[in-house]
Image (cartoon, rainbow, N blue to C red; front, side):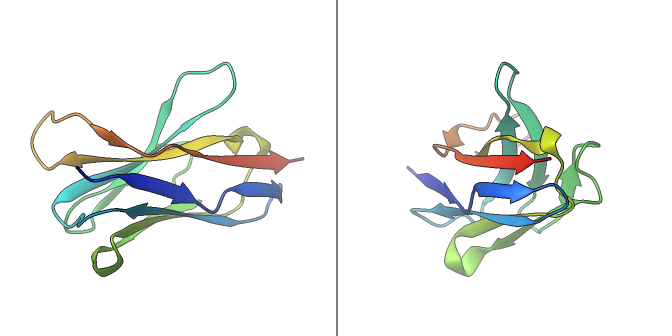
Length: 118
């Protein structure tokens, strides 16, 4: 069972950048990898995903500011966040699922806090 660990969160001023990492305990080349976030008092929301062949898809709220990439040799997925806004403040989670229609994300990390100050 692949385990996921996020890192790279922290406090940043609005307009700044952060890069989150999600490192897996096993090989991730066969998985679709997603990023999600949950702000206080809100439901968890989708941020973006990267497919097995590195196609990416993003939520409208982050499109053009966030970039997801993967390094299968390092079993790591990245979330580069630029032009951060206070509304990006949340706990960020990475998740993995098999590449199959309607498959759920069934492997989750513990999350990393991102706080954007105004």
